[in-house]
Each structure stands twice: as structure tokens, then as C-alpha cells.
Image 1 (cartoon, rainbow over the protein chains, first blue to last red):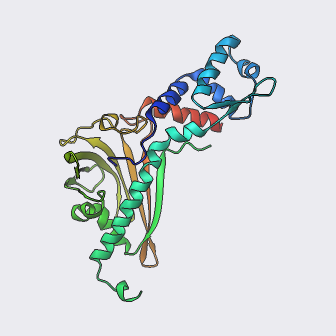
Image 2: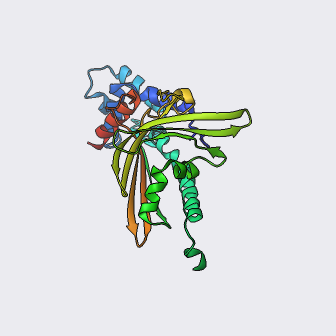
Image 3: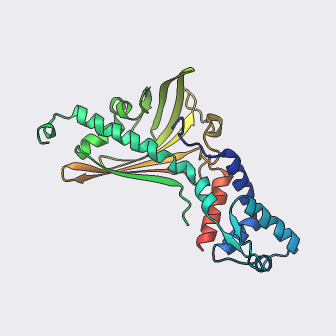
Length: 121
Length: 158
């Protein structure tokens, strides 16, 4: 619990959190979670200029939350949930800590119980 | 897509349920297994009843000398010998909360987490299911980030 073996990359987390700290960008991700879309399609529900939407998309792209096809004519955007798995990492980092704890709990139980099972195996 | 805000572990322990319950609720037993290898767990307070306080310390030797980290929390559900739920936060030696960030934890780490321990008889042995979760938005320590993520997740799932 004190020292985590694989601390998350704080710089990367900063970028992901900054990208998520905007309702327009979250709405864009929500739209993309239903399937890929072009910038024009993404801009439709917003009262915003295309360049303004493009700016938001670039922020999401830099955070790794959006992948854009290099070759297709309209370069559709695709949602990449990978970085979200990273930011959800605090809980997963406890897994090995608890695994180790349960090992010790198991050992401790063995230690304090009169050994009837010691003769079985 | 799953935005996991909790971790769950399940094990079969070679001991009856009553005994496993005592491992969690009696200070001397808890101290014997809970801490990381090489650490001692001096328990200050373990008032195992709903609303009762838990306050303990993990003390470990590091190359820079002894390091102590304090934790404080409250029992939320005490239903012997099968269900125990308590909160946990990093604190100082007096039990005042300190932010996880100040303790070097990742910035998305919730200030208050909650541990739920479920014990079931499994043929004379014990099936234990432990869930460690961040306490959601209504807690005083919930961060804006967690709320934002929860909202996003709900949004994406809609």
C-alpha cells in the first residue's frame, strides 16, 4: 500500500485527465463509443465551428483517447478506451497487495490452528 | 468498456468461518497478517461495531530509516461472522485525514476507500470475498475526477 511496484505514469495521467475535464470532449467520446465518426459528424450536435471541434479532437487524440485513420479520405475518429483503463488503475494496483495479504492470512491461520490437516497430506 | 473502481479477490481459506472472522476483528490477529512483509502493524484502535473507529499504523524499515503510515476508518457493517465493511483513509497519528496525493499515491486515488469482507462456510473451510472500492461521490473525500469518470462511464453505457 505504501510503495506501489508499478506507479502510473503521472505525466500521461495528467494529459488524460486534462482531456476529460471538458464536457464537450466527454460528449465527443460518448458519441464515438457508439461507433466511429468523421469530424463533420462529431460537430453536428454542437453549436461550434469546425475548427473549435477539431481542436477538442486533437486534445483527445494527444491523450490517446481517439485514434484517427491515416488513409481514409475523411479520417474518421475512433474511441480508444485504453487510457481510461490506466486512469482506473488505482484499484487494480491493490490486487497484488491483497494477494500477498491473503497469503499471509493463510499462513497465519495455519500457524494458529491445531494441525489436524498436517497429517493428511 | 469497464472503468474499474474496485478490486475483488476471492479465496478459500483452510479455517472455519468463525476463526477467519477473528482474523479481521481482533487486533493481535489482524496485526499478524495484514502488513506487508517486513512491516509491523501497531493497532491503536479497533472498535468493531457500526460507527466504531479503526486506527492503525504500518511501520516499516526503509533504507532511510523507519517509516510510519497511519490509517483511519470506521466500521460500517458488522455482522458476525459473515459480513464486515469498513472505510479506510490515510491519516496522521491523531487520525486526521491526509490526502493520498500528499502520501505519494496516484492522483486519482480516492481519499476514502471501503473494504467489504464476506465470509461463507465452504465445507468446514471458508470462502472469502473481499472488495476494496473507492467511496463514491457523496463522501467528503470524493474527488472531481472520480465524479467526472463516473459520469463519463454512465454516459458511455447509455
